[in-house]
Length: 348
Image 1 (cartoon, rainbow, N blue to C red):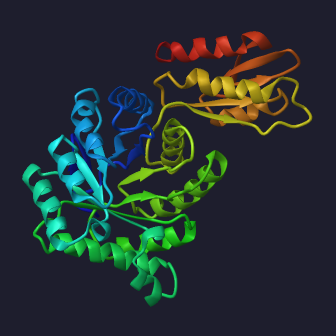
Image 2 (image 1 turned 90 degrees about the vertical axis):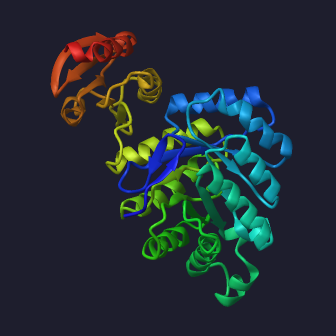
Image 3 (image 1 turned 30 degrees about the vertical axis):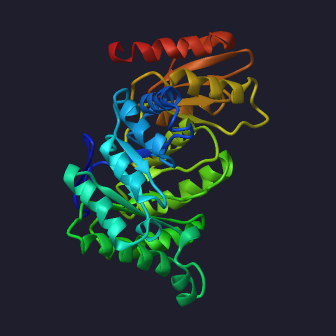
């Protein structure tokens, strides 16, 4: 079991639930835009947010951002140790650095001292794309062993400075390398681990790679925070992360919609209906399963595993609850009938 680490008012490690993290894609210097995006992500289910800090203006902007958000904020720092110190001074709840690109021991120590003074954790991040040249040569390429050695080497630098309030992340776009690296690392450290498949890609490709990689890692009990890295709207990352955690039984994350893949018996616009059901149920705070089935032949039977569902027919459909047919409804009223049942679920 990993050690407990506090990030703002959240605690990770020590058997606490796996938390979802994302990263803003606004200019951090634009406080209004960044706050607006963070609050949308918070509403969607994001637990921790990370912001890029490439300039001193961005570091100073964190103070204004912090005043207007509810979730912990992580400052993402590369190269310039002064930005890390400024981010800490302006209220960052955690900083993400790669000590290897911060520079000399004196510069790393200055960052560590600032973090120690305010009691905030440091996330030591190592990516396959920035693995030290000597380790690439030693292992004849980028390997899981090289990533683990790099991470532990950087962690030791900070531990030797008397600070162990740390979180580790090792990321690769190679899914199986990433899985192997996490398996090795988890056996060698008790620091909490932030898990993700870096540069996973666009929506479809990135979701598949992240689901496989995170699923294999989390299923082994490895990982304390996760990020689904997608090239797109960060809100998509939250939806995907929640579904991954729910599928693995690690989180109850609202209504789960299941739907059949359609076939020649389908007599309604099932694809459109399933999408509308997902949108319609997004703001209903229930932890139940809703089925959307394409025909009345198998629909009632297949929907038995769900708490409630609808099954389409020719211009009409069935509303099914706990495997029992409640009523037959015209197709254009199916969505409203389902929503009415969900809104009054506690009264049912």
